[in-house]
Length: 210
Image 1 (tube, rainbow, N blue to C red):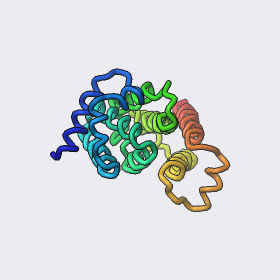
Image 2 (image 1 turned 90 degrees about the horizontal axis):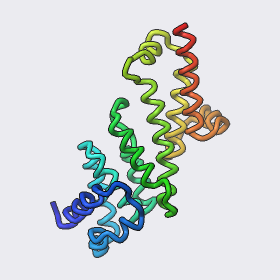
Image 3 (image 1 turned 180 degrees about the vertical axis):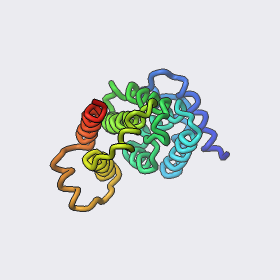
Image 4 (image 1 turned 45 degrees about the vertical axis):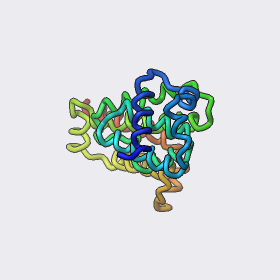
């Protein structure tokens, strides 16, 4: 591990211990001040690499600190790259610790006035909405999964496809066929489509169970 990587690791460990992080706390932390001597390009790359490592190891406390450090120092330059790497998407729908991580991040940014943190706040609402939909489909008792498997409904499959495409198009610059893009535009933002899909699945499940 190089000197820069060690400094980032030290900063992350230090800030991860703080229950409520703010832009001011991060910006004035001595470990962050020490990073200012490094070039912006190299520091951005190293911070992203560190965050990805914490993500892959399931170290969500440190991932939280790394993401907030990155957003504080680089704003959208960091956030867009983090999103495109899938850093804010759970690997497993039943990974409850990841949902707790998203909720903790949401608390951190909830009162912040920094434009970059406000942008992250909006993104987190999207990821939490998506996570709730995925958890509903993959509920622990398996009732919803069995229902979808045993009694497939074209409308449910379409709702899920539209939800996924809406998120990809809005937040990942994914180009989708014009057949779907107009429909998605008419339906509204991904969060709204997600809520429609959730209600539709719930309604269909209630009918199938009656």
